[in-house]
Length: 84
Image (cartoon, rainbow, N blue to C red; front, side):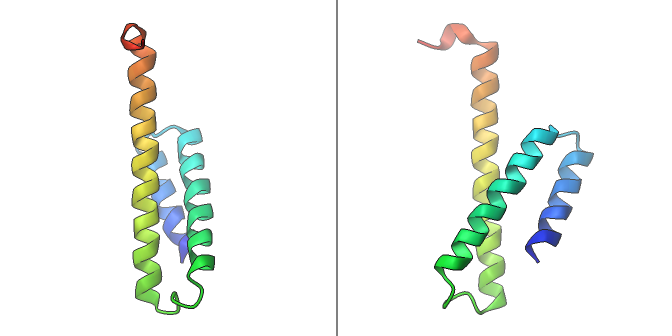
């Protein structure tokens, strides 16, 4: 389930001309976080809807962190005079 979801997300991002390194980073981080969360909640995660919700939360939070990092990096690269 995780691999299929990540494959669709990866394909959509690459089709939208998102940087390949950024997509690979997202995929790696999401896989690691989901596996860690599943191991941590092994007794609670027997329900498929719980797994799906957890996967959605991890994908969303990881995507937002990478997006924020990208925005901040681009902002400071093009506007170095704002850095103290």
